[in-house]
Length: 434
Image 1: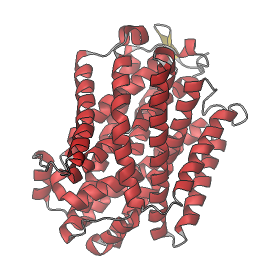
Image 2 (image 1 turned 45 degrees about the vertical axis):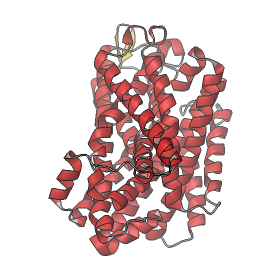
Image 3 (image 1 turned 135 degrees about the vertical axis):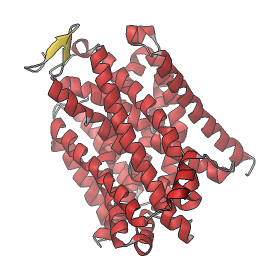
Image 4 (image 1 turned 180 degrees about the horizontal axis):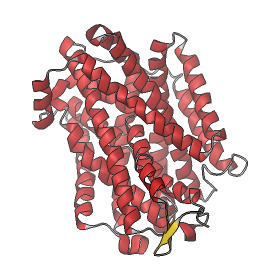
């Protein structure tokens, strides 16, 4: 049953206008902000320090790609009412489901581990206590929020945490970039085709088009319908033109926010670290510390604050996203609307992924290397999942009359081709030693 005050359009409950407007600054903003997680921040800082402003063009180029993949994922979850891996389980062979699930779980866990390490290194700048202790405390704090916070509380906390990324806008102002160089790097694409540059390109694509974004967005569309009182798949199935238009604006807003922050992170490090010759960024703390003498202590502190704030948003997105995927694949109950007692296996998977990610930080791997490797792993897991999303959203059996439009197909297939090409190019260049 729909919540009191909702209307129906073609049999599908239609949220009140105020709720729909608020939603536009909700799910898409959360997904967009989680895309600029500590892994992405580390990768983008490395790109800015290594390549300078010449690589700024990647932000506007990836913006429409980000919109395409996240919107198609949202549309899939909104129309089917079961989430991405629920669709894969119902409509694709088991071997495809298993292979995709394994890849996504590995990618989510590695990136969550990298983010915990990045958060700890950044927090260590602001609070001088041992990094291993910070990793444990942060993991426990995130688990407590996931286990004991309501869906509405979690969503609202995430929305406010997203705004911490605005710290990077201020960091750029303090860094005083060369406007001419920034404009050239933004509008005149330039790159060298060697394995190092291509690995950074794939890492950027991996962090901006990460697989966890797809599953998270599709599942949050389902959770929003549950919040409206639609408990069964039959009640959740279907959507309207107006709801899809709202979703488009929601995703567009979130992805634009993410792209702007991505741009400012690269510009901040390009204007300071690259210009000063600090090309080898070895840790999240190193990036923030190096900014202090170059752009002032406030810039370094703001850089660290951004890592911490978005990390508290992104890590639960990854761990909960992995739990959604596994539970949908095997048919276990899964929902943030359910309590731990009502969905024991779902919350057990969240805890397991979180603890494995925490434990990986005690293997002695350099945090920033961990972040870049995580981005590359996501870069390789993204293409096959994107291909499945394109096939599913074009399937009459799955989507009925809500299949992709011509322009969305063009953008979606272009994005799929681009991520496949980048991954293949990296393999080839690495193999021939360039």
